[in-house]
Length: 350
Image (spheres, rainbow, N blue to C red):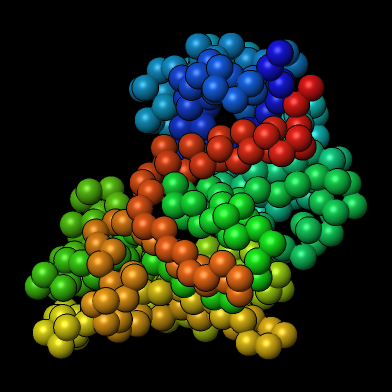
């Protein structure tokens, strides 16, 4: 008999819509493969919610048009409950797992922080797609979760389909991680690849924007803050680092020139934007900066939008994972994976 896991999804932008579509398209396959029935009871936005206690009809979310374009909730053909907007929807969802997919704010963590604290305080597990709360208030989230017995998952907030969190949490369970080093932002890696080929930074950025790889305002990518946020989450969850963002020196690629990148290549080296966290005695130090790597470094050959992470542990040595799609679909799939793993760990499911 399948384990039933009741879900609430808060935030219905590009990634949130992909989560709903993924659950609709793959739900039966997931149940057959893992014995886990994922029931989406609520889709919550700041303007209202779609809600049904025994699960929303998944046919609502199978339209590719509605998946790929923002539309009002009313177009999904289900009554919109205005009383369940935002935090009220989280509080009244009845879910066992909350998928937090509201926009990331690295300064306040809101509105996702309030949603997560409310859910965790009630013993509801939280799967994060939103980096903001984890960056701004990790200690507080951990304390609230510890008090209620709820769990926190963050694969989708730490490089989408790249299994950086899983590598440390599962593959290196029991070992002490001494180093995390990674190319955690596909946009900057794409731009550096083009600069290495001779394109200047502005032209490379324009190409990335035309392809939909970069946002209209790409500052978080170019200035290194997206990489820093992902590194901070990985270091705090996998290395128990207790770091805050202001403690992480951050230098992006916004001042690099194509001449500098090509010059490194002529010397047999490559330039990569790396996030790096290293254990030094009783503390962990982290930084983000462009680094010149020798061509035989495990991360030197990572090109285009591909991401990678390298972990070094005390007992199991070095592991490097390269790949994983960079897209809303990949981030959504990572969140669904987190829910499946909560069930496999025995945290949810009746």
